Image 1 (cartoon, rainbow, N blue to C red):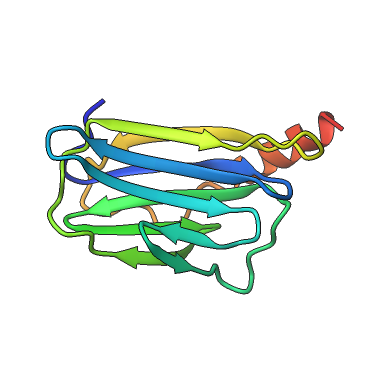
Image 2: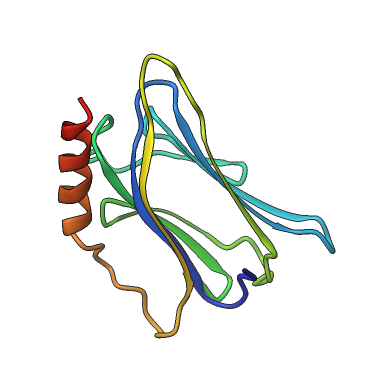
Length: 144
């Protein structure tokens, strides 16, 4: 799937200690690379820029995330709060999206939902459906 123009990547994750959820947007023709890494300790590495989430963010719980590109602006949201906004330059057409979640034996990390799509409307919904968090909480309790 080529990601050109406006797009979003959204989902719900649960990470234990020492987990990282990494997204790499790549274009092979000119070696363009845009990494976004969400760490278990609440930090977000946005290319080479370290950001911290809002004080309301709680680790070790199911968390909604969204990576949104509108024009040449890229935003990262956690639980409906915008955590980071960056203008990485030209709106590159990415050819590849790589997603990784590190594995740690003592704590299990899960990616409950993932959706990648282009933006058909001019505005991304500011709030991610709260039913996703309820579903993830129920699923994490049933696995214990």
